Amino acid sequence: MAVAEDVVREALKEVIDPELFVNIVDLGLIYDVTVTEGDEGKSAVAIEMTMTSPACPAGPQLLSQSKEAAGKVEGVGAVEVKLVMQPPWTPDRMTEDARDQLGIF
Image (cartoon, rainbow, N blue to C red; front, top):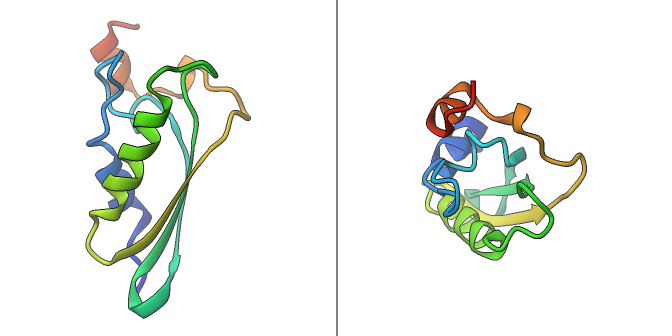
């Protein structure tokens, strides 16, 4: 049985943007999480995410940490994290929690 998408998204909340100090899920950087049956009964996870800007200096770090966080979920085998820049990220993708943390009303 495949791991639930919401379990992977919850695990991704441990990845914190080092400049904004808000997790990448609440920032709206995670565009898509796809979970499928993988090898040996483990789930394969494909993540599409973006950055707050194309020149984000924390990009490689966030990609690596996202792959690591998803890979720690019980039942997950292979993890692929793909950086996408379309559609461009905008602040309206943030959750209310992120807006509160950043003082955006």
